[in-house]
Length: 132
Image (tube, rainbow, N blue to C red):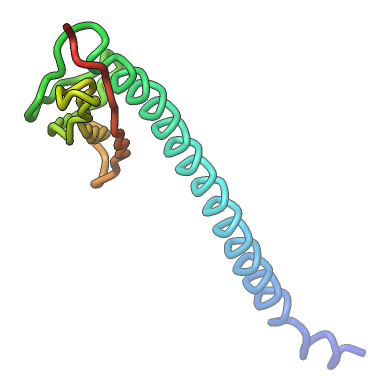
């Protein structure tokens, strides 16, 4: 009986080390999953804010005033950066040959101020009547 106890004396330490290694691997995977979820939540929040603010900005183009052709940029109150490119499109002529509507293409890119190239792009083609 005594010989059996002597032959098992070192196994408890090895078993404890193996158990700790398995526990560390399991905790590592758990923390990786939690941090991945947090990153996904932050990205979803950015995309939601960018979509709302960008759609609102594009909807207002040409409604509040003249269409701002060319390049422009700025920041929203929450810190997101935007750059807008507006180019004229074809005109629609009436039966008399006079233009009755004009069009333009707008491309809006929204970026995080401290993102790693993370951006959201909205593109729109609008037609509006010619002002008489």
